[in-house]
Image (cartoon, rainbow, N blue to C red; front, top):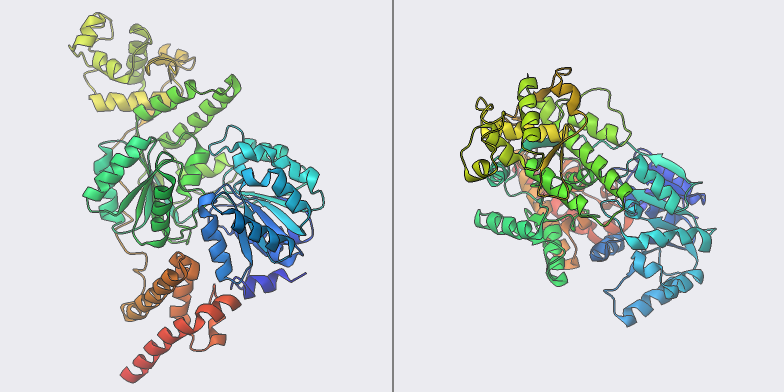
Amino acid sequence: MQNPRDILQHVFGYHSFRGQQEAIVQALVNGEDALVLMPTGGGKSLCYQIPALARPGTGIVISPLIALMQDQVSALRELGVRAGFLNSTLSFPEVQATERALLAGELDLLYVAPERLIQPRTLDLLQRAPLALFAIDEAHCVAQWGHDFRADYLRLDMLHREFPEVPRIALTATADMRTREEIVERLELGAAEQFIVGFDRPNIQYRIQQKDNPRRQLLSFLKEEHPQQAGIVYCLSRKKVEQTADWLCREGFNALPYHAGLPGKLRETHQSRFLREDGVIMVATIAFGMGIDKPDVRFVAHLDLPKSVEAYYQETGRAGRDGQPATALLLYGLEDVVKLRQMMGASEGNEQFKRQEQQRLSAMLGLCEITSCRRQTLLRYFGDVMEEPCGNCDTCLIPPETWDATEAVRKALSCVYRTGQRFGATHIVDVLRGSTNEKVITQGHDKVTTYGIGQDLTADEWRTVLRQLVAAGYLDVDPAGFGGLQLTELCRPVLRGEQSVHLRRDLRTRKPTTRTARRPDADIAEADRPLWEALRACRRRLAEEHGVPPYVIFHDVTLRDMLEQRPLHEQDLLSVNGVGDSKLKRFGIEFLDVIREFDYSGSQAL
């Protein structure tokens, strides 16, 4: 059995563990089970890769991400780790070769899709092989009505029964208390030690804005703050994904669509380009993103409302894995709430599931409408505590204004009641503002007492009022109808004059001004920039030669360390963060030559 600290340094090139990594690794090395909740970019993979190398046998990694297994395995092989995978992309001879390597003890890590793992052939194979551990990645997929549910995960409880002596580790970046309990129950991890690492991603700036011409808002955001930078734009429908990607291309951006309806080969090509090329924007449904290791995603933008805080947190967490500043922008409106409520109403889930989904949506709406620090609310949802406001979200940077909306709220609620609680927001606004359109007249709503009593507010202001009333639970959306608004029990004290209501005032033109368009490497001194670009060019060439994304060769943080330390000899290069024995042997001389050339040129200039 090898020493975990030696593996960390010589294989992965890091000089110390972060946070609870060492405790998690030691638990696995000792043969104990573990449940790990760690934010994206927190170093979850090391928590099972190092124990798999330290313990005798092969570590089996169960991952739902067939499309990414090749990249994950390629990255490990560049480190000198003997890694392989079994999934449906392999030919039968390739499967046989991998199985022989497993039985011969020639693999340190084997990645397996859950549907492959539960097949009798695979289980028989594993029974005959020496196993170090089971790592169940993206463990939230076991939550039966979660945002990334995978039915095959429900059968992974058999690992405890079939392989009682093999330690198991379940890992996820996203799980509230309810999902955590479900993971423990379904995977039979009751005796596992739980490691709950803080959920905070301080480098991500969270912003949520009311929709006001979303394309114009997105275009301004990209041009002013993230030109030529990699990012992800999430949309709710496949049609919107394709339309948005086409529009961004016409606006001069390198944008690609990604959704489950595209041919598999095209999805694979687009994903590969996103990982390997600079400045690509992926426009996608939630079918894209889980397990994406690209460190330099500078923004995640949502053009539609996510249906839960878990989904929002996980999707925004794909930005800024390298620890550099990143932005999470969400644009949402009342129409998003109506659409999601209708989708939930049409769901095949039972009544308990529908109630839970409504609760999750309500929590998401609450996050959108709060006037206090968004990060504090986001972390509180996952049971994490932040004592002071973060100073890096829109509500901290520009505190929103509020106003006493009690009178306007009573007018709106009364109008919903007088028109029969069957109509959507557009019709309610028309009645309040005294519109003479055909629908108002045909329905006879020009005769109700609330007709025309709301001319003191614009149509947009009334829509803002109605949106916040839905978010606060004063109004509900009829899920079985066409988005008709209905009163809830919370309305009674307001309508009786027993309770006042303060709402936030939407100022569409205001946005945080602390972030201006700048390159991620803008902090590099002009004198160092030629060497920086030469190191990047060297990395890019090696990545193309090896058929892997550039960050698999070295992350930006490693190149920055080279820039600072200027190592001239192999032993010096080992002190650079992210350079282990294998990468030193494979790539060291290439980067040393680049640095020596610049060092020599600099000396000559002196």
